[in-house]
Length: 427
Ligand code: SF4
Ligand code: SF4
Image (cartoon, rainbow, N blue to C red; front, side, top):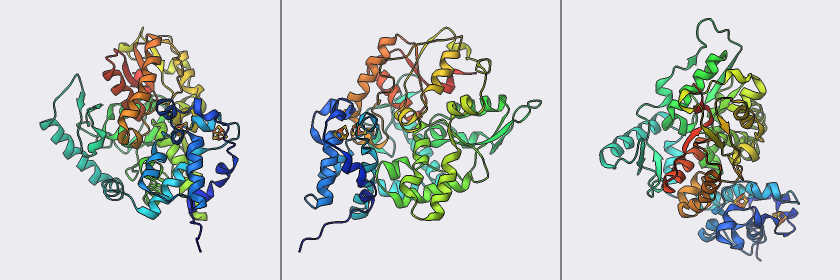
């Protein structure tokens, strides 16, 4: 007798499968479908595939995983779905069930289970590879190089910034106090994320300085690690993701706020409850942790309620036209849409220009852009057209991952725009 297979994680999101009416509204919204025009790219097609898994008509194969993985988890389909179907959750669950059956493929199993959770060792490996990169790889313009580091697939001729000579956490103390004479109004923990720590430490220093100057004491807990996004969301390795989540919860347990400059890290950490809470104790810990997490612009606008005079534009950006790319994880996942625009619109020293489709996915999506770089580039080129139409001098965003994608996009397209994190605009 044929038994129906059990997919433990998918079953938790079965209501999302059941609500889909096959109306096809998601087709016009999906950035992947817009490039590929095949049914398996779009939310409706992915739902049909997963339904077939549950009914036993299909099995977990590499080909099926490939079809499910061609998704940036941008959440545009969910936002546009009249039935409220949330495909990104189902896809994440399907990835987890695949890992339970087939394991995590090499080299990801080694990187995720052994390197990423061991922050110090991971830092040394990144450092070692950056030396290698400096000796053997050709330099391109400015600080941009063709990088071929140990995540070999991340290279592929892509322009990304070099590994920083000194990481953020090696450059700043654990406790960062406001300058003498500035009263402390609150204390926050700073979740620095891998990109800011290893690639953009100057961004991290600017954020600490900005917060300190506005009376905020900034703690950079040494026990924090990777948020886990590439591990449990990108790959479905929930067991390793849980270990990372536990470490981060512990690192920030005595703090009231967890501030991040990375929308992807923030939303991944807010997803601990949804995907990783496997008992009541974790559920409570993750729920308390989730409530502390704030994107940096959200914190500045909603918590500190800073006046426009607190934002001092750095001299090199005065008089520039600035546009803003809204990361999917910022707008659709965290619901932070107005705060960065409120800051940008308040700046008298720049001209802010909203780009068309500012919230359209840039195609980065972490491991998606590693695995499907050609597809990722096509999605990014639509963003390039939006940026060009503004005639902006500077593009800012609120996610170092998007920033890397936009740097690559601007270079590939011969665009003059400088790409920055929004907090880099300030002194
Ligand atoms: S828009 Fe929603 S209900 Fe319609 S086909 Fe897409 S996922 Fe299904
Ligand atoms: S999450 Fe984005 S890429 Fe994935 S199916 Fe939905 S719209 Fe397409």
